[in-house]
Length: 262
Image (cartoon, rainbow, N blue to C red):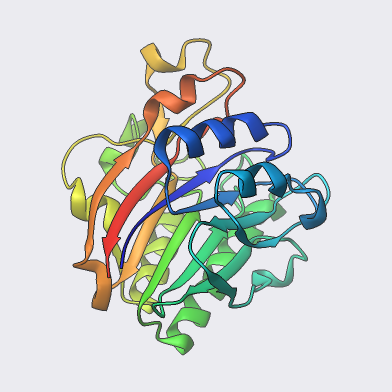
């Protein structure tokens, strides 16, 4: 069964409903995973999505913060959601397709501004979340699985605009990259995006603080698509839709796409 999947930190699904609809009309992915929905589940604007053929959804939500959703043209069943690090946040939801593939959608904590858990509890929460992810996937030993989301870490030197300048900046610090690698190893995950686009600078996030984000191009690759080794060879066609960052009143993230033939 071939399908195309996209992941996008939307930074409020209700505020940016029209942008989601534009993406669905323009690109028509079979599955769209959203993060930072900032909405209770019952207030996610599903009617408009359903009108475009996205008649299936699993989600975890909360008022004003966090929130993850998987909307799909393809039938899917809810497959749980974990509260990693016991934060009480809506940051993970899973769904299973009819072909047995499980999709995990994550929104990892950003971690605040200071890369030191002794003075910044948010950074500690981020590391604890990643540790719980590692332990969970080590125990689960996932198969036929895809993991997507805003993981809030740019692991490679060419995933950031300036490696040396960002080594002490949250999202690219060595301790975060190490935790990121441990999660990958625990689930035997393959970075599908870099499997398809192995070389060159690649970003999915550009700060709102930059007055001309496109020209400055001080980006980071914070949004990821992974697959377990048993299906990673079926992945192809990865791309980052950079131009979406330039839409009117955009999210600061661009959607990341991948296709699978399974």
